[in-house]
Image (cartoon, rainbow, N blue to C red; front, side, top):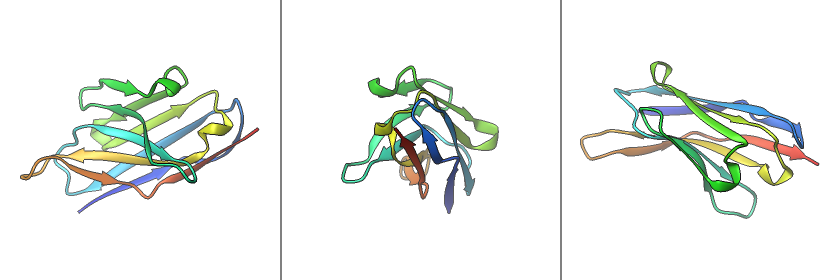
Length: 119
């Protein structure tokens, strides 16, 4: 069994910063891609950023330059540094990890952490 636990969300004013953390635990030998997604009320869950095992990053255009994803493979962790936050960044942020298995990569999700940006 694999568990992902996010932390670091909260209430921040527009223009502020937050750092989200996600730690994976359980029966893990290695983790392929890790990523952050978000879901605003009434909207579908969307990708924010992802990072491969060897550190290659991908960002959704609207987040590029404001958000930075990083990971620590030794700690099975992924982080999201968010700067210049806007009210439209308000959402529940979810961590995702792709973990190899005999059946191919399996995707795991955390429970989410709320980010609220006030104007």
